[in-house]
Length: 439
Ligand code: SF4
Image 1 (cartoon, protein in one colour):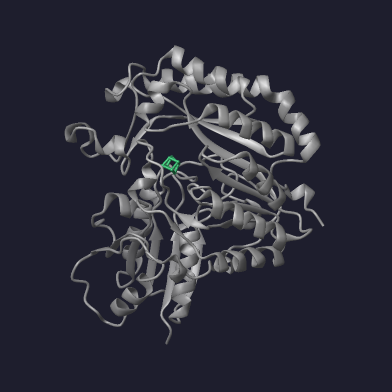
Image 2 (cartoon, rainbow, N blue to C red):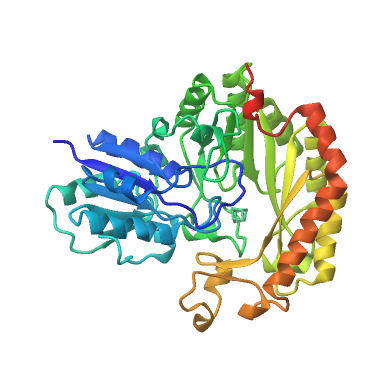
């Protein structure tokens, strides 16, 4: 009889107000498991409320439970403690079920997690189904930690099994939010980034830039169009890491989508050109999120980031002209940050053509160069440390920095409100909402 697997995305520790998200990794894994004739069930506790009784019922005929432990800076916040609880409950109820932990957290921590039978670091989409097959066929688990590393050739990753997602989830439903978007999807075209930002945790799991084949991307994109998707979030850390390739893909998207109503959101560094903006707009890109971090030169040096602000101004002006929304991402809390440098960044943001800003408190996160450079005794037992006086990393307390952050966002949004409303009036909302599902 075919073996059965339950894929679990545990409930996040808290609800971050993000636009949209789900686990592409579990959907890829589902496809590879089905290729080996496993029966697959899926539950996402960032969408469905956890109920212990129902969970017990869901593992009644299951041979293996795979739990994805997500890293905390990602969209849905960490879910590690709830993931541990899933493993414990599985064992309490049915000790014979194989429990496996996967995900960015496992890659960053890179050691066995005792509550699971097996911890897998690295990218599991290609190799893990075969390994599980071996264990379920009676193979002995000699070592309960496996490191799979990264998948060098991304053409080996199967298409995401989007059939696992229900109607409400693709319209943005999550625990504390009703479905509010037109049908939406995630799409991945690359992994990794050639940037060297010292705060970036992504370096912990993606040291090398890798691309999905264009053929695969276009097939996936066409499938999304045929299935009536109106919003696509490209999940790449930096979609424009190879600018020529990014333009080529978007030109093809423009051709493939034809007259279909589509809005696309991407993340990009600022090393692009004006031409990219018009190419993006024709493909349906409606939102570009840029990492700026600070306007102050010495703080940018600390972050190992270089930005050509003159070029960025031209890019933002072009985005305004063609109606693409732009978001500037900033960080407060570098050791040299003070009221003056934060004000310098705020002044820049206000006078720039950004439509919105995200401001974060600097976090020394496992996997990042900043975290790795901390003395062992400072980071002992911690996978991240906020930059604040409590941790000896800033002259300001966490609450003072949080106040700078809120002040930055509220002053910016107050002063830019009219511009934003005008832009929405001229171009529509940045994403299609459920109330405006286009025909
Ligand atoms: S550009 Fe973005 S993804 Fe790339 S290293 Fe910097 S923060 Fe990380």
